[in-house]
Image 1 (cartoon, one colour):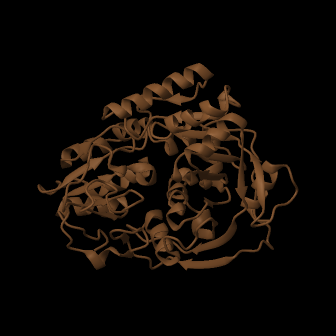
Image 2 (tube, one colour):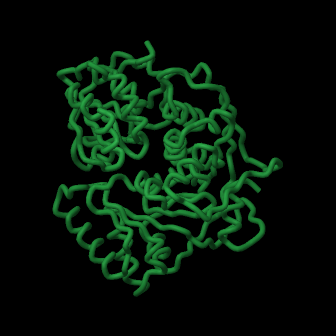
Image 3 (spheres, rainbow, N blue to C red):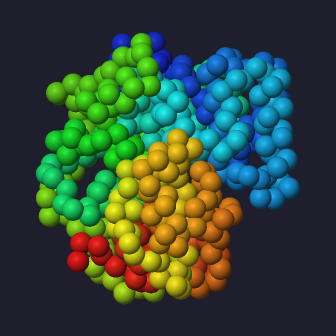
Length: 414
């Protein structure tokens, strides 16, 4: 079996599972946020009176924090009341950060476990050797009530990556390149298992970026075997009592992809699909109105460092709004301590509180008709960040920062 099949077999209490098989799995951790908790609660209240285990439910307010409209405020009030009623102690309501950053930072994510979240980018936790996937509010309500859910065991794609990434080329460029090859629907309900020396040598931040965007190819989950950096990260957070899995050497895969990345250039996803990917040099000169650095994809300290190095002693173009949102309060504090925030402020950037913010077009960076944004986020669908007549380009933090300086999309490696 491969790593995903081994985890699902353990969770369903059997020795072996096969692709296409329907299983009932025990859930180790369930997460919802301010946007999905209330729909989950409304369904839960129709089917149950008690949650299965209040210590295994995590709630994070991140999508509309602070509340930007009355509806958001009401959703948050309902969720706070629910958490108090059911003794859910792990609720983060005061701008602690984006759920997919907060859970690993706080030591909730363990290798070899099953984590479900009422958010599609829950697959981020696959970076820790975890089976992690998103689900809708109705399914999450059943998890809240029973601690179990059903899965069809997915077929797997093996994604082997070899080589060393060049300067200004990051994990974001790699996953955009992979999605560009597989397609936005090319891996629908599949496991993307990332392997190879490039993956094994990556830091945790880069691994999270890659697994975060697995869903953009339609995948059920993205996953990697734990490496030395992962174990160090977990040890630092005193995470104990977990089991790591590796794929058997004779594991079977539906598809096999090999990527040699020594010559990979900075990549960019053009409107309005994540698989519409080209080297940045192909769209160099495209005028922009806004640049955004943040999100659960690229709002970590390593991303802010990269952007700050690019911005060093430069000024944001007068026609561009550069918005920066650290992925968590901890990241924000570390960026302050390192002088990164000063670099952004000196350049003329707007720093907003940790959270999802502009990524989903909720607030703090909504685009109007005809505006163009280059962003470190994970989606560039029509209307994703505001008006349907706006455009979003996806790139790494250095590309975004360099473009903000010049007022147009530019390749920093030039």
